[in-house]
Length: 440
Image (cartoon, rainbow, N blue to C red):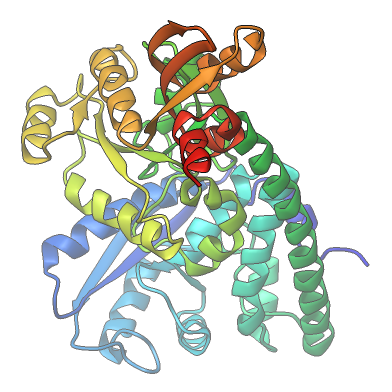
């Protein structure tokens, strides 16, 4: 069976020769103010730009709750239609998530495609997915999003004929039931493929666990500089661009800390406010690198207007994937662009560090603090290693941090910090265990 959307996933959704003209719509609900709405719309404009389109106008409305039919009020919809005609807009993008019926009603009245923030983020992910797993994850999220939006009628034909940003999110197909069955079969196939890929990833993770190396995962808001930091610390050569969601696929590199102990450092996909739940679900196996990490490096862009808002957004996603229990080290990046702001942020968040992944400033502080944090997670064990077991001594040095050594008649007494898996593998040489069994 052919994939009805596979072709689109393999290439950009946007015709780069003709940038679409977009009108943005934001709504201020109780609990937020106009400044919050404007900041969110500014971020949506950046997302639109990343997707390859241009903002040509925006409309904002205050409401106590969304209108069931239009999301915004009917009068505001008429005003929106007039604005679209005045600026010759191709598409309307709402900062809030639209119900399928609301999207349909808006398209019918406006005479042009209406999509929401979720659709824009899915579109960007579709452009940036390169690996087999990344493409499957994005396609699964896209199909789950599109399935309830399949409809008959003129809007569907208009959406299919129109190219660009909204081409994947239009009203639907003419052969509705056939397309619905095809999409459901495709979803089932993708879920099966991703389960198999997750099993492979789980085996790789168990192999890393057997190595005894601590795992550190870099998380943070999109475009905070996570890939730049990984490159600065490990010469990883990961794509690093000043654009949103430049990295979708995790990259792991070995990092030797100043004390000599090695750790595995992994870069991850960036987060964003109101990251679509479907994407979080689809990327769950990829995001498990954060859930299973020993420590998180939470990178924050010190130069943005609302760093605390970005911190909160990242922690919200971490909570959703059950990674909020993993201890984190806050790292305020881009200190070269905002030195005063970075200094204040460090003061407001005791234990954090300020760095510039571009200039290298502050990296020494990071590499001094991180080992101390990791050591706090490991236990000091005392081992008695026979002199003819050089392989065991090498494993202790490779997998942990040797605190002290003492020569004894029976062998070398070693006090070392070891992770749980490493200590378990070396239990036959653990002095405390041996004494305990002897007492029995």
